[in-house]
Length: 51
Image: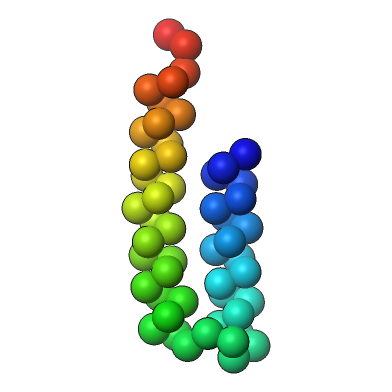
């Protein structure tokens, strides 16, 4: 569920940039952050998965 929410947030960022609510720099910085968060989420999911 968290991964889906993260992807939805990324989509909202892209839309915000396209319609002028966020600058390219703002959106890029936040998208860079979401990449790191996505990696952490994947690691957490992997660690919590039953073997």
